[in-house]
Length: 335
Ligand code: UDP
Image (cartoon, protein in one colour):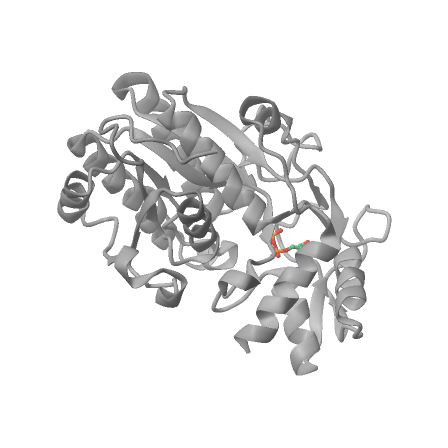
């Protein structure tokens, strides 16, 4: 399929601005947008992203809270739609300093939306999270599950989701909110993968344990699950990136605002992830069992039927060994 033509200027392809495009999910999405033929621009303040993850000519080192410059950029570059990733993502940090999350994630998003409204750009894909559900009442989780965040990170995303609901209603500002489950994997051929500092996510920590010999701690083995460890829905970052492309194309076609879960619908326990790593790498994972981590629900699995039915998206890389293999290739290159 050819890239979407710009709805305003039919001679050119659409221009998509990616905020936070030097981060993990943003850099993969930027890569797939470019592959599909879009004109892409990245705005990132590089506070937590990596400039090597973005071609220099596409990168604007800028903070989305700088409303004046954002408005100018949106106008000058004739941006058709924005995919908004720029945010802090650490649950633990958000409990240490909630104000950071309300300022950067909630207030920062509002500045961006104001700049977009002034520039007349009214299509946005928003990077949301399963953390808006907190501890869900039913699993697999559908989008009808109520907002019930249990940490400031999740709350900051709920705040932005609510802004978008009102902006849709009163300002014809159309958005797709994508609630991700556990993003993982990599695109090693493109030199892209997961590099958080500090790293808190399971798969990179298990791979690091193999590389360093330092044991990884598994948080609890007495959960009410078949093997006692927590179950999560691990979604390949490239499948997530493709969900953003489906979402932005829905908006470019004039589609209505929507909210979608993005997951595979299949859960894997911490122990199963460890076993997959051992199969893929052929090495034993040094590990120890620690206490439960506060706020970890036993099972989080997405029902993403709505996204599949509405936009035709499918998780093409859902196999756990494939996910681990891509992450492992990236981890070996990144060392
Ligand atoms: N986990 C773990 N040890 C770690 C990091 C994570 O046992 O060092 C577990 C965590 O309790 C959860 C799963 O791995 O059950 C995924 O955690 P992660 O932090 O990667 O993502 P989250 O589910 O918090 O978004």
